[in-house]
Length: 415
Ligand SMILES: Cc1cc2nc3c(=O)[nH]c(=O)nc-3n(C[C@H](O)[C@H](O)[C@H](O)COP(=O)(O)OP(=O)(O)OC[C@H]3O[C@@H](n4cnc5c(N)ncnc54)[C@H](O)[C@@H]3O)c2cc1C
Image 1 (tube, rainbow, N blue to C red):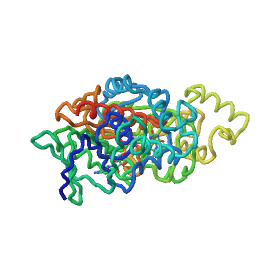
Image 2 (cartoon, rainbow, N blue to C red):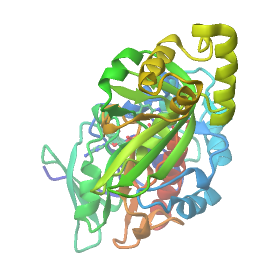
Image 3 (cartoon, helix red, strand yellow):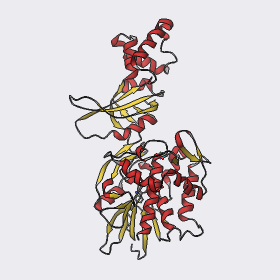
Image 4 (cartoon, rainbow, N blue to C red):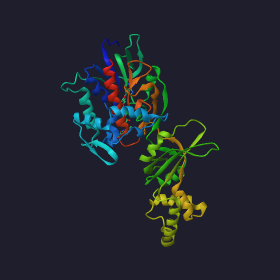
């Protein structure tokens, strides 16, 4: 279907980055089309933070971000220098979204409802706001299949149903593949690739691990414990290399290990061939192994068989005692196990479970000052589509909003 209208900017994706880009761009008076395959904007946003949406992290800084190629911090520093968490908070306040802070800088809407965030973004992008230019046009049910750059420098985006949208600028805000049930299937990355961009292989991040030790996990299902997790890679015959470590709540399920700290290391599970990976859990991180062995010996002397009582959840204590059978269940062998409980990931929990994507559009081909492509004039990208990911705690959305704002501003400015 032909549509002769030419927009200044077509934004692909009405998620966090795309809506924020539309808000920034409309302030310049640009004519904007936001193309969304779902029947409404912000579908994934409604599911964030268990329906409460951890909308920003007040303390988010460049060093909190990584990439599949390990060099996101300098890129993120340029982005946050222009639009950091404080500026984003001000933008949200101007849209009527008050926030409340929980621990570690995590900001939630005062209503504790993700819907408030979506409504604020929709107001900013599509509502009538004085002195703010025309509102952006939201075109739902538009599943982009491909995009091309025409000889006149404009872009043409074609939907699965044959509709075409033409625009002078194209802004890719179509996410990665995480939360695939909410609409992201990596098609946007394929479009970026077809336009000439290199894609760092996307892998699920902020997710748990399905592990080999199902016999142990079945006994531990439902247990939650505070601890430290290290993700290690090992080449055949080589020493294990620590890829990432984090501390927090660890959750055991009948075939997998998850919890915030496990999710935070999952983006490093990037198989390059020939490597084995393992998770090493320390479920009593407050004591080193020697001190723990001494403590266990003292407790054993005074409490007998009950020496692990109250130190650990019952199911975990029982499983550890069983694992220590071969080594005589001495305080030393139990302390070693508690500090290095090992699980072997066979896979991450996958795209349905993942909260974000590690990998995406390679950063060396994007200008962090404008979020513009260094290869394709008029092309911009923002959010999870880029090879940038951060930990749990509002960091992903902070990134999506910050990069979306800059991309929208610059796509409009340079039209
Ligand atoms: C369950 C869950 C909970 C989360 N909770 C939090 C949280 O509390 N705090 C936090 O910071 N982060 C959270 N995240 C991560 C965060 O939601 C994402 O990182 C963020 O939404 C990415 O923003 P984005 O705009 O780049 O992509 P998205 O928000 O994924 O938006 C991309 C949009 O593009 C559309 N699209 C994709 N392909 C096409 C196509 N071919 N044609 C047309 N449209 C297309 C999609 O339908 C979608 O609407 C959570 C993620 C999940 C899955």
